Image (cartoon, rainbow, N blue to C red):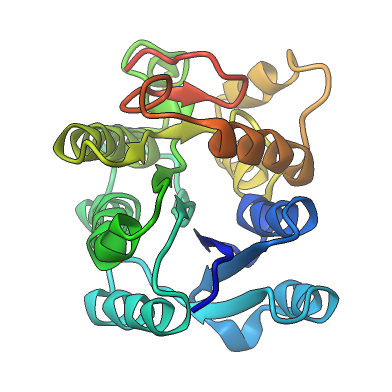
Length: 256
């Protein structure tokens, strides 16, 4: 079995996930990355990384909340590497901006399935692999929009689907921290990043408040820039410093 530092990054087909995979491969010569996507046959950017970094990346199917599929992925990693060192649970959904009074229950359930249940199913599937690592990390990607006293919750419209489910994800991740003394686990907010998800949110926000808030940021970081900061923080994290905390990309702590 290989002694590489083994990463699993979900939601890696584009945006922040793709940036994380790229950053790991370029900065860590000994790393092997499992890049989780819904459809491995339709991931051209990752195919390019496979050509650039042969034998160091596997594009694998990882569908949120698919219990059998996640277990099968765990078995594949077990067979090939025998352990996992770092899991970045990046897969998520934010495709609407409704008020509480108008949200569809089905839409809310779908956000919860992907953002919360999906992360828990993933954790269960890789639990044994993380236990075999000398320095295991389980890092779900969250958002400052989940803060109960943040700016997003005070907007007059939108945010319930994403914010509420990410707040639930934060709770689950902190619970994982307390239940597993051998593990480094914490929710990590990347801040505002220039991705398709953010652009879609700006369009969906009919109040214009999100756009105004983003205009206060001198330069909106690209996925590549944000990924470099995130991986540096993740790789240097410890249970004593970051474990169980709500951590921002700049290293500060966010309020729950």
